[in-house]
Image 1 (cartoon, one colour):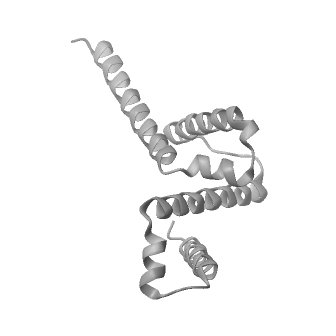
Image 2 (cartoon, rainbow, N blue to C red):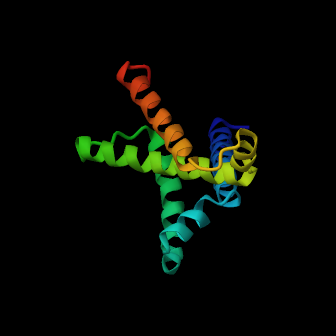
Amino acid sequence: MSNSLLQIVLAFVGLSSGVIAAAGIFAFLAIIGVYPRVIGRTDTKMHILLFETMIILGGIMGNIVDLYELPIRFGGSLMLGTFGLSVGIFVGCLAMSLAETLKAYPILIRRVHLAVGIRYMILAMGLGKMFGSLIYFARGMG
């Protein structure tokens, strides 16, 4: 097998593996209900095609930026803050969808006998995650 043919085969296998892994992650997020929950909560069912397009474009652009290590040189602190907030909201939606799918919170509520205050428990978990991340990045660990 010639060197150029080997390079083409390796490129094909690598790209195919990436596409399969990305499709698996998107399917997992769809199955646990992240996207339908966000669409239902925001009452934006009329923009479902836009949601689908942005999810696909986000996955493609994220892969391109990660693969080629493209620097993002615009927006400064405002862009970084917006990106951080968006990622935080997405991770929160992911965690809530996964928790609801696994029915973890109802079990915890029954065992702890927590009748009121579930919103404070969720808020405390979110704030703990936020402060932990801030400490992690402030100390230069990331």
